[in-house]
Image 1 (cartoon, helix red, strand yellow):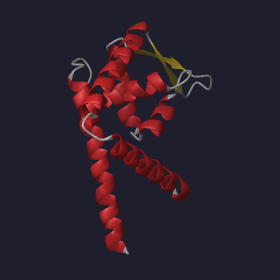
Image 2: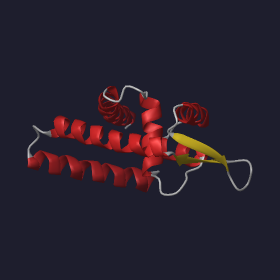
Image 3: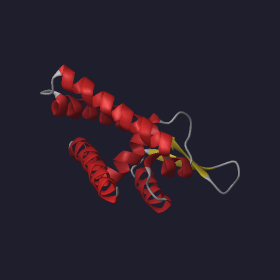
Length: 144
């Protein structure tokens, strides 16, 4: 059974690499933001309200140190503003107007890249891929 787990881990790693390839290609057209900061800003754009640094770490899977570094860069570039939370030990992150504009630019780049990446796939293959990925997500949630 251990060999099956190794193969499974290799397949999951391949999916992660594919995701990173897509993100890096999206990011290549944005020029003023690196891939880690892109992931963090993308998550901030998708969050309702003002995520805390811990929320960002949990939702992205990045360490607190990487989140802090990314938010430092995003704040330095004027995309976000960090504010002390209610408990004085946490910080929330707010989008600036420039950050909201960057979110729209990122979303357009993401759509272009996804269209390019999947344009040659048949509707049947796309549906099968969606079903497999949904099932994979369901299984991971069930056993996590």
